[in-house]
Image (cartoon, rainbow, N blue to C red; front, side):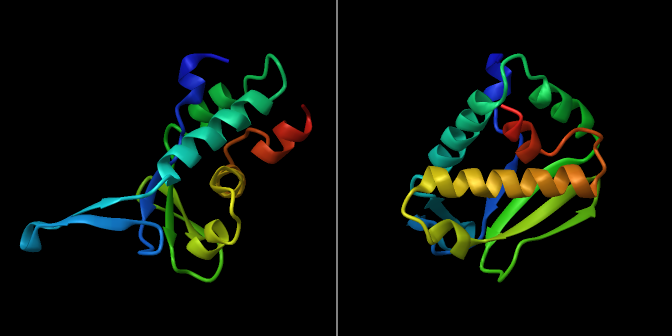
Length: 139
């Protein structure tokens, strides 16, 4: 795999207050927050996914090319179920914070989130690449 394959192709908004902590409150100018370990878990989960793809796989490159006009954003918040929708030139998935927090392994939880979100993106936007979960099963 190439180094750019390891760049996580998902933008993430952390809305649930159970996932982050305020480290500085600047009143009207906003707050500075930290998402304790979740950014690293997302990066490590993606790296594991890329490493688990079959040798010589072009799935990551193909996905990036197919999703160039319909990017993926994930909002992790206090919703009760996973939902996805198109809008404004992209696709957004709302993912329940409870699903991330139910396990003790952050990397495993993020791997599940990534697979769920990307599979919905590929399917609902008809990107023309196999589902990521299917590509991994082919390994």
